[in-house]
Image (cartoon, rainbow, N blue to C red; front, top):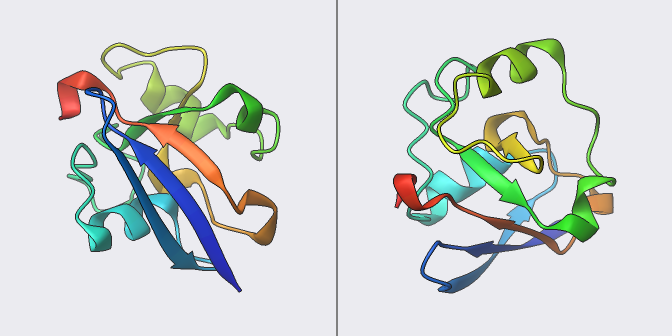
Length: 107
């Protein structure tokens, strides 16, 4: 199944992309050249450079934050209540239409 995703950068520019089911949000974003997803650690949950702000209507639809992600988010700049690491979001059919914003400092 193809998953539809929306990335909004800090200036409000909107990019709609698609991804095959099973990839991480970070993998999909980097392959599509989405600005603001640096992914310095390559998806190892070790850097927080793939932080995204999940749209409020999607926050409750994501799996809970695991301990490793929670620990890494402690070091994320400009963390918000809806912050997640894109490398830790595995794309499933339930996330079709997921909308996230990239932080200004990552732009």
